[in-house]
Length: 190
Image 1 (cartoon, helix red, strand yellow):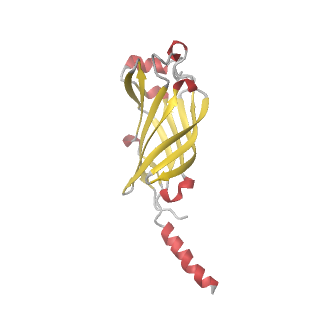
Image 2 (cartoon, helix red, strand yellow):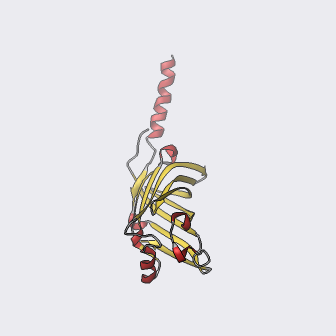
Image 3 (cartoon, rainbow, N blue to C red):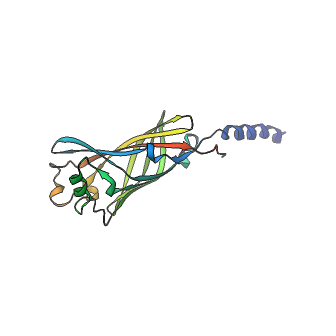
């Protein structure tokens, strides 16, 4: 008798899991990585033209979510060619020695509604620190959209050394904003 009761439960679980959707195919041409900061009290913005992202996200299996992002630091666009050259230099990103910034998630937790937070390790200029980045997720058919932001302190990563370490000239806080668009993989089974 127990076997007969378990069979419908197993079937119900299999049917429910057949509808799970995993978003893992990043559309880089539709995604963006931008930043905002203040220089001499004036708000400024920029972006990174090149980055890669690997995501695995299924809202029904949040504990299995993973993210890896790598930003080509030489692809920075500050809105000024002179500014781009300066921040690629040794006192800022030193892109010859450290060409990329990397983020690897360690965990993702649900915050309620369509809000989540990923925690992981961010490495810039050979320095690796823990970061947490809240994000919103929305699904539009087979498209998954991730929008989030977090603030880092540039001096924690030795970004802007020497005379540029003066936070009165360039603020220590830099807001990183990401917009990642993904396609869903074929339905997965648990």
